[in-house]
Length: 88
Image (cartoon, rainbow, N blue to C red; front, side, top):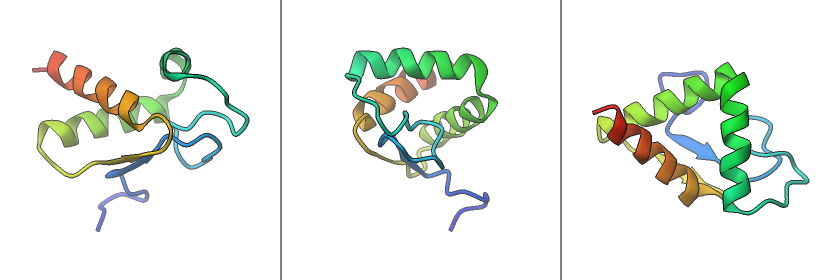
């Protein structure tokens, strides 16, 4: 059970999921590299994405469960782990 309005332990990277700040637009056709570029651009302007990324990084740091699904799940996990290592 989550303590949040949304379940912070579940992240979806599938295109078109309006409830996930990690989800690109529904018509997205980009590869992993383009997803990283899209995510960086969104990070600069989307406070919701920054907050959710911070929550995910903290979950990894505290060894809490984190379920990342969708087309770019592995890419996002690598980003989260990189951020977590830099914050040590």
